Length: 181
Image (cartoon, rainbow, N blue to C red; front, side, top):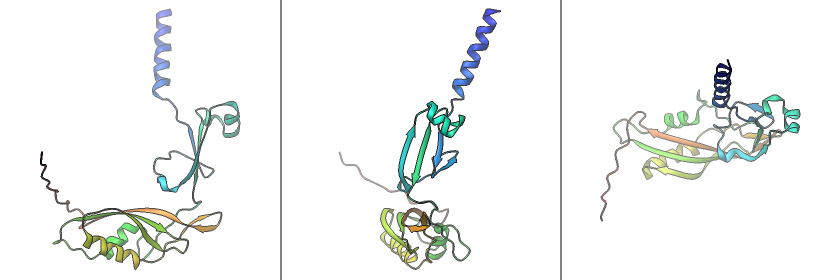
């Protein structure tokens, strides 16, 4: 009987250990399931509250593993909507002239969305060719205005990452390199 009880207790402990709980995530005052998708550039501050009586009293039993409070630089993120596109990368793909006969090219950019809704390139993270980059930058310059991010009802600057590869579905050529020893 004691042996059977010990096996049940060990199984229970193993189950509880395997299903370890995560802390409660709170972003701008709202409880969320995860904070994994938040771009680092959007985070203003992070506070970690311990799993103590005070934290549990304020946030409830869900805070029994602690609370991670994330404050973003904005309350509402910047949004793009124009000509039937709600995704800026899709909009750019439709505006950049790059046909199927051309080699595959890619750019990764960090854009700043200003308080006026204008998108500007703040940093080129990657570009496979100068020609493709220039065409993408031109399309960004001619693009419609965004609805800017807001904080406390006022427009604020925000950062958006854009990754574009054209033609879609075509693989980038393999770069060849010679290593001299």
